[in-house]
Length: 306
Image (cartoon, rainbow, N blue to C red; front, side, top):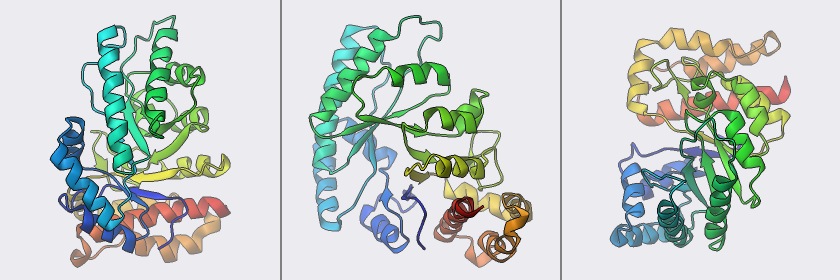
């Protein structure tokens, strides 16, 4: 299967055997995989045995990880001591990323005071972080939280002097902030280089595509209109999805069909039904994952031609 955009997938249901994950990825046109939370924590705690073992696995299997998350709890951007510690952490983590041939660091922006009139000191700090990791030829991806409004985040990004950064777009964030997904994407489109297309239910848990709050077709239209050559991330708990598929089989099938216009009725009837329908013998991690990705690919492919 060939996808329209480059695909990143969380394959950590295959334990932490990255060689097996990468073999599966290559067999299924997946471009990059992501580190497990356990490995991420070990790297952020500078566990050299873990880092050295991972370096060897990457070399032997030519594995491509998309990003390395930066973990640093309780960061207060108004405290000089916290800034110094985090800047040093960025330096060390960027050196590790370079060693592991990982191009990006992923960092979630802290919760900011919405009433701040002067963001200049914080923007200055971010510029320093970007400068620090750029010395190792690493780029920073900002991850939003559910507290900072789009206007605050946009103000920050627009005023960063060093443009060696991108934005991680998660549709669930504007939903949590009661903002439009479509408008939010449009506002940030020039910064976005990865879009999380995982669907979420009302309890904020990953669910089957078409069964939750995220309208993937709206996002795909924005990607096409803006000619955004971004990565597509699929990151869901596949075990939970399997139980949802067994419970909401036909409901989900009908919701997926609604993504398609009457012009695409033939595509709708012949392809989407085959994508969504799973027999009991098919309900396993790999087949569920590939069918979810196939849905995404067909939706994006459809938006190319409508």
